[in-house]
Amino acid sequence: MPRARKGNALRKGGQRRGGARSSAQADSGSSEDEAASEARSTTSDCPSLLSTTAEDSLGGDAVDEQGQQEDLEEKLKEYVDCLTDKSAKTRQGALESLRLALASRLLPDFLLERSLTLTDALEKCLKKGKALHHYPKPPALLPFRMKK
Image (tube, rainbow, N blue to C red; front, side):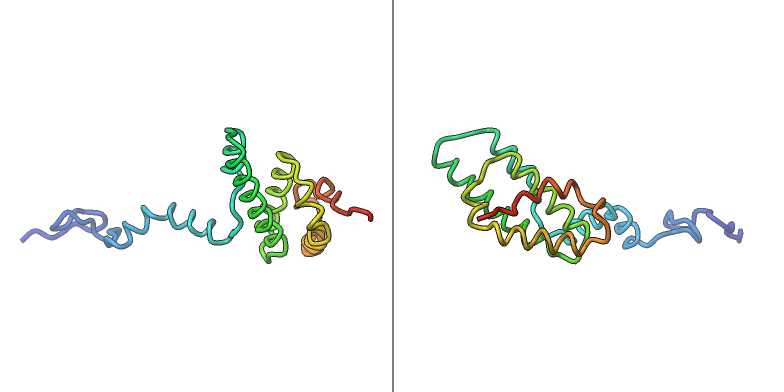
């Protein structure tokens, strides 16, 4: 009987010797991108504002606008909650999302009702960070300090 070749020679069944992967390993290799995207989504519980700004630009009647405003305010509340997260990337994302949301729409009632909450959350967020250069334009977010 002939001997099998060493190395990467084909074996019976089409598998290669030595470097062959099991089907579970092959499947996990193809799903590495899925696992990476899932890991990114679980590290940041803060929603993305991109879909909201796209919806806002479409416009609509008064009822849709009111619903969009309420949705935006809910997302802003979530962003404020994310400002005190342990992860620096989550805090950065929350700051950037807040900046974009407040730049895209004027929300005076939301800001007046939550001025102290926003100020406290921003201060805690900036204190948690080791250096201010990690955050996207924090001075742009600090006008929340409203004097009475």
